[in-house]
Amino acid sequence: SDLEILYLNDSKKLSAARREELYEEIKEKAICYGVGIASPERIDQINILQATYEAMRDAIAALMPEIGRASCRKECRSR
Image 1: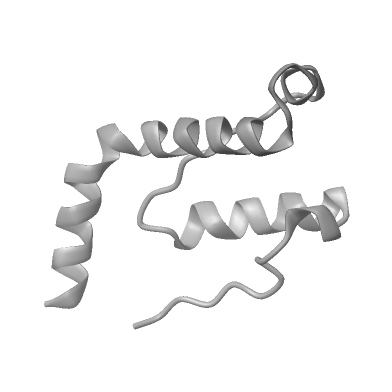
Image 2: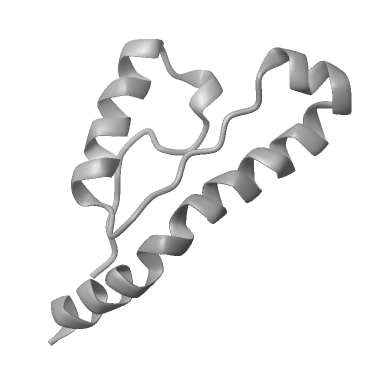
């Protein structure tokens, strides 16, 4: 089934408290998750677009050790 988490579309539009609430909900409901962060200093060094790409690569890399277990969990859920 499709998972829907309300308000999860643009973290910049959220208060810090709402972001924390969503982070907890994501950790609870997601098969796996990864986090990527771009600091203001890094954004200034390489620009916002490149810093965003870098943060996304970091988030994906954080998933790599979980992929095997995530696939197993997804497979088990669908049975």
